[in-house]
Amino acid sequence: MSRIPGWLLRHRITVEEYLGEGSKGPRYGPPQELRCFVDEQTRAVRSPGGEDVTSSSTAYAAPGTRVRPLSRVTLPSGRKTTVIAALDRDGGGLPTPDHVEIQLQ
Image (cartoon, rainbow, N blue to C red; front, side, top):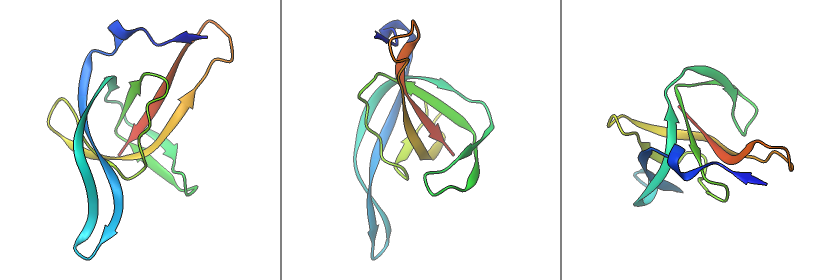
């Protein structure tokens, strides 16, 4: 099993974990910095609820990274967005880099 090389994780994003809805709207945890590679490319993806949605960017992080859908993310550009889904990408022993794909609105 091959992990995504650390030297590829050139960007840093800030993730505020979605904690649920409160009386004043969504609640988020404290900001946490995450090393990743950010690709700002628009594409169609499917949300965990099965809807077709547009992803404006994708972050690739080390295996084992856990990010909940609806968490708030600040990209290196300063743009704020939310997590659509975080997907484990495991090559199953093939010579591909294992990583977590974080799809962002």
